[in-house]
Amino acid sequence: MRLNGKVAVITGGAGGMGRSTVLRFLAEGAKVLIADFNADQGAQTMAMAADAGYAENCRFIKTDVADETHVKAMFECAADNFSRVDIVFNNAGVGGVIGPIWDVEESEWDYTFDVLAKGVFFGIKHGARALRAHGTGGAIINTASVAGLSGGCGPLVYSAAKAAVVNMTKGASVQLSADRIRVNCVCPGFILTGLTQSPKRTPEEAAKHMDGMQPWPDHGTGDDIAGTVVFLASDDAKFITGESIVVDGGLTAIGPDLWQRFGQPYEATMTKNRLTKGTTGERNTVRDVKD
Ligand SMILES: NC(=O)c1ccc[n+]([C@@H]2O[C@H](COP(=O)([O-])OP(=O)(O)OC[C@H]3O[C@@H](n4cnc5c(N)ncnc54)[C@H](O)[C@@H]3O)[C@@H](O)[C@H]2O)c1
Image (cartoon, rainbow, N blue to C red; front, side):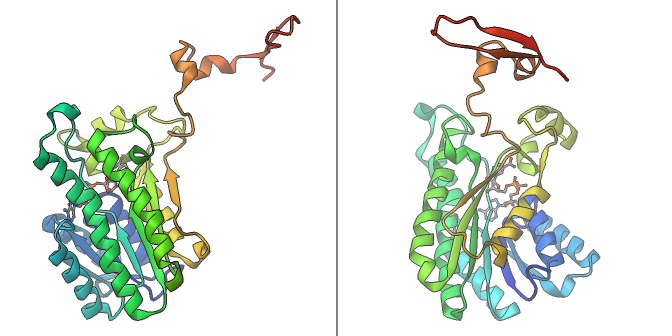
């Protein structure tokens, strides 16, 4: 077990990739405090943890990550129940405001940034206090997004907030290295969760909508993110800090997908092999792909 005896605080742990990570952390031997706004989903996740035999190792606290008093209370709750904190996963999130920038209201910007960026700031700030107080290092992992890495992968305000998370991760990693506290983030691509179903898609409709979104044939799942977070939290990643790990089935690897823009779907470019010689004056050759 890679996280044996470690204590983790996981925000947004009641649903989606947070829930997957809670269950995976428990299976890896960690004790987990789930901190989430949605108490009903929190109760469901607690029941799943109990069914898997981890009732004693799991607690829930209703938390709004955008409220600093809640975030403080979350770390106090972890210390009260499990006497220490080793790992913080700042993962809670919402889609926030989606629309043209000239129409976004200040309150909509504030809500989006409060949850996605200020929530992570509070999580790192109070997480760092908890880890430093203990003095034995630790790991902080934040959920950013591929949306934070370019202009075309998500809503504008959401993407700006996730870019802030990527940068905050780097800055915090520098400040906390001396305390042996590693800070990294994960940048998911399209992942099948409640978020990608909302506001009104069924899981099946969401899955269909996401078909072919990335080069990898399967859909991304919460377990794909959980596995990456376990790695980043574990000693296997003990020399990794300030890093953003993209988990997206090749969505960003394909870049602007110029073949598609040139009217040649990628698959069509896979049937012939062309040796082009540019402006050398020599002839190009074309042949069929052998097998
Ligand atoms: N699903 C995707 O495709 C995708 C892609 C990239 C990044 N992300 C990010 O991954 C993270 C998890 O998303 P998910 O897909 O699992 O979504 P989800 O909706 O399934 O789960 C998000 C959880 O966060 C909780 N939450 C929301 N606001 C909160 C607040 N203010 N305080 C505390 N808890 C709050 C929700 O109650 C929910 O349980 C988010 O930060 C999201 O932006 C998701």
